[in-house]
Length: 163
Image (tube, rainbow, N blue to C red):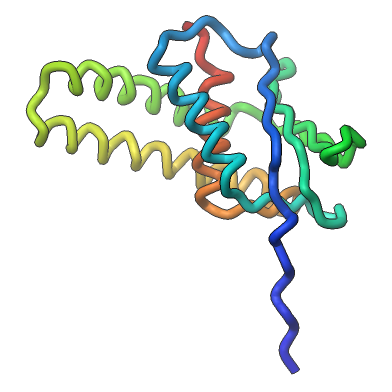
């Protein structure tokens, strides 16, 4: 006897907000990354909090002290669960990610296509590492797929950015 796969069509995020108190000043490149990540995340994602019935959900991300806050609610605003994750596992990854992003943004203005591609491959590699770390940290709390983790990692990075 086989068990049916869960129907995840409603296990998704339909709105994302970032805690304005957590966000530092940022330039147009960072604001652009943030807007794209939110748009892409809402367009297509898998987000299933453990123990909660199906969604859809809204997500408010913020930083509280040294913790990353995931405030998960129903579409009508009813609280589902809030998770606080240590920021420590993300600090080095985010620092490396921003260093390579700075190199990338400088390179796209003056470098050869080969150099831009090499930097972009490194950038994607660090981004993937952050995404896998996020999936590991959310294991047993919220089920997400890799693409959702990638978009969430971008937003976590924006929260770290202090201009």
